[in-house]
Image 1 (cartoon, helix red, strand yellow):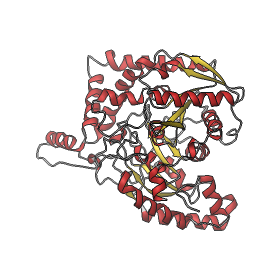
Image 2 (image 1 turned 180 degrees about the horizontal axis):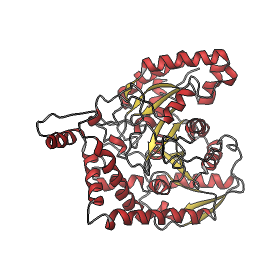
Image 3 (image 1 turned 90 degrees about the vertical axis):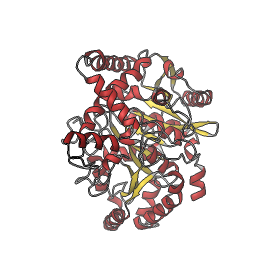
Length: 489
């Protein structure tokens, strides 16, 4: 069975009945990456030797006891280049980390490896996960498999493009303000951001530590749930990891939405949404209504200040987290006899324009005399945003909305920061409140994919999967394949 069009569930079945092997799937996957990566530049590097070792280990597990092997055993996966893997160069798509090879593997990644997954490579992304188009990578942009002249979204654009191009059935990304859901929408795949604290951040190169969360891209909601259930759970090495037990999202995946109350936030339909996107999402809402859900118009008035709040808190945390990249311990070092000049030249040459912009914004917001006026006030507004979600969820079971206000736009089309930041206007409130959210394909606008976002209360991750799966199974949008995937098949 080919790995280029199959789901995790189908591939796992073929591995267990012996109709395919981990080595065969790996060979198909690497050949497919070779065929597509010249167009998408989704991968910064492949990890052939590591993958071969893991495929052989998976084969031994499957031979010993195929029925008890984990669902991910032998399944090819790709990892965003902000996730540390022992001995594999990990740069966060930044020159400042060129040549850095971590001495350890992050928890979420290790849990995939322990389940028998086969890592095929590290995917391109916006530098330090800062961006909404994947044009900020120090190593070049990623092309959208639906139209390689258009952006795949960001910052996890390489992971989204890899799944959309048919390279792998699933990939990991990170979501700080929409960096899984927005590229999933633009690339026509499923992308899930868990509740903050559900997946360990140990081994994730930090952007904004109170917002970052690791999650999966996949070809189906069920596949995303399988990956999530593999990587979720408490980790004592992450102080923000929540200790409570994780609900198995597969248990109620097929329960449907009949009788559920779904909220439709009016503000999420007025934030510069394109007519084609609105039409696709409104059609999706009618499908959910036809499945037995009731729709209720709700209001989240603080949405209008969400963008401003995010772009104070996230840059402030970025400023602190990126202070460690000074040329002393790892990555790039621009030699100079004077220590301060070495610091300054290393950071000047190592960081790209968007990273510098956010570091400066964050440093200013944290500086003496401005901390109370900006950072402290932003944290208070963040609490108001979270409280609004709590009040709304007292009346509805989940929220449904567009994932992105637009479909994929041409590269270079948004050269001012504000228009780029607006790409995440309906995703970043979810991060500010620490909620789970998913994007599932729901149609096309101008021939390009559109995503439906489903949001649930904190720790109700299974509910997100349930709503998304019900919609997915009632439609055919998730079966659509990008032109690049078709051409390379």
